[in-house]
Image (spheres, rainbow, N blue to C red):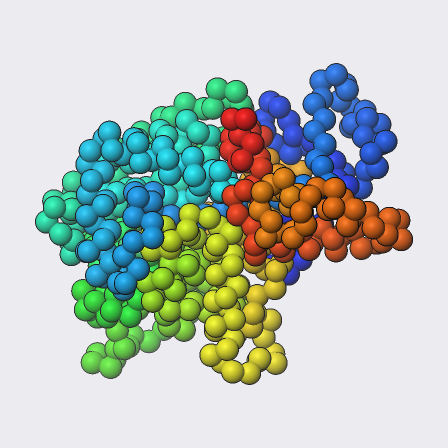
Length: 508
Ligand code: GUN
Ligand code: FE
């Protein structure tokens, strides 16, 4: 059985799929929708493979394949802080809880130990791709990249750029030092060798520019990062945006009107830009948070913006025009009392959205928790509005299960600009996938509510052929229960680029 997202509101649920993965590349070679048990060898032969060269893996009843989860926002060095500090809002939480922990990563041994357990955990939870923030340290962040590379996870890895408004014991001495360390990390990551057993594949670990947030960067630092980005259009960028009200106030104070360079021209809007009248002096409503990043050339199609809880209308239009994506981090947004992001509204504007755990602002490294809280967040937004708007698709409505599934997988892939490689199970994409089990031996009774695997089989087989047309609904029901009640016990096997790298059955 296989389930894969297709659009924001639809997915394919195939109870009897046959999917072929190339041993040489780890990519999906073909996918047949509906193959009876007795036809497997014939179908393989029809695709031209000699049966002795093929390993056939059959899933049991109650097991199914889905694409791996994409965590578009996670701070690896904050994992040791999980579950602490939830009494604070953002700015106090950073200075009281987060910066003290991150500063410990000056110690390479500590970094190695902490990062090894972090990556093991995110992989076993089913995040096949993660966008990681390291600390400000180049050395520790190289260790982070090495550990990820060793475990075989797909990832973006960046060191935080932060040269102001940070404590004396945890701040970079200058913009220049920050940029030099950033270049050094990028070179290190790009020199990592290809995985030994799939030499044909693309690199799994990629560098990403990581200005922590506008508050922690001087204009000179953002300018230097913008120049680095301009030299290298493939280089991804990640940062925080509009998470907390005090943060927004401080950002606007640090970048007053008139303090910013002019942004690059907007694509296909040349005329409009040229004919736009300058805002009269004194009445300038001021810069927006997104406008700060844009002025330095840091908003583009491979920019990942975390949070976006309090975005102004003008910023929504700008983010859309630049093609940047939003990492929705509902666990963190509730936990740090930041607010409820209007994700449905962003989707209706055609903005790319993925999910992020935002560990340790978020208290769970599992994307399943982010799915659950994204659902609750949409309901909170809908409740606040009071009435269900008649003419919107997503705005101020609760999000359907298909949309939540999409955000956790394909939406995340779009936000990372990797949608041609990952995010769904289809021919030509990498086999980044999870084998999920809702069988009772998975050890999580919440998911199915039956005591034994036999009962599960009996339940499914109850009406036999008479129910054949509802097999897809059974499978959809399994996915929904997994998304809402599942945890790592149900994530049995995790594959990245065709390789078995994690899950409950790994190492057994
Ligand atoms: N803004 C700047 N740094 C951070 C961080 O580490 N976590 C969160 N949630 N927001 C931030
Ligand atoms: Fe964050």
